[in-house]
Image (cartoon, rainbow, N blue to C red; front, side, top):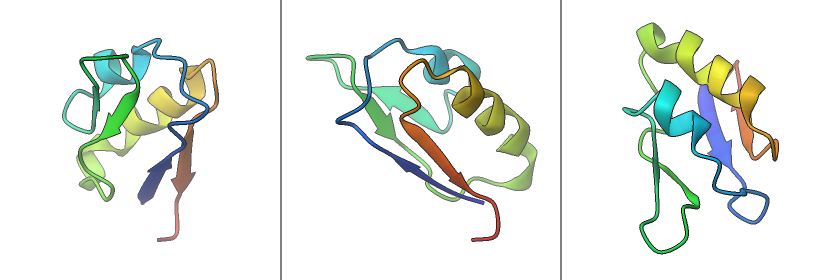
Length: 66
């Protein structure tokens, strides 16, 4: 799995950070998503999928076959 984020779309809701803090963080100045791990280990995939599903701005993209 490979993850990309569109920081232009991000609204800073922070749900991704709450669900998968080892993969996502937020910038201090504006709360915009920061991708910490673009290719997380398999044991984190479920949390990453949930993060993408709950993102209100659809700023997280998953590439499952990468």
